[in-house]
Amino acid sequence: MADQESIDTASIENAYRELTGTVPANIAERIRIAGISGRNRSILRIEELRSQLIMDNPLGAKTAQLVHFAQLLAIGEEKAAELHADAARKAGASLEELVGVVELALITAGMPAYSRGVAILGRVFPENQT
Image: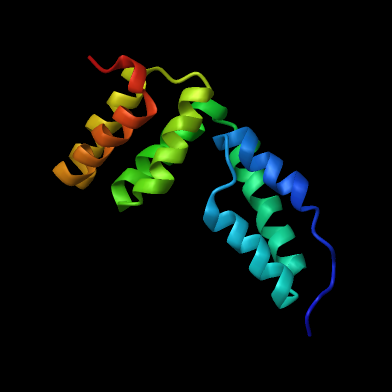
């Protein structure tokens, strides 16, 4: 049986804008599909969990985003890694700290992760290019 609980999409979208500066396409699609499939309650629970784990993380915003960036680099999720690299930058992470993450990714996930990370940082910090 489908639930018909309404979703406050504006608050969900604003939370993503606050974190990453945008509403990622996959998140917009998640919200859309939940709405048309009658699974609104599920999406609300997912977003509550996400908020608890990411926004209220005891590591703080900067460290949590650095960890998220590292994990996504290691599993090869370039688009999501870029969003979290930028979120880490917005939370106060320096280019040097993000390079540290990329260097550690080399150890755990190899040269492809390192190369992916360098490419991402080039996009996140275009003003530092010579």
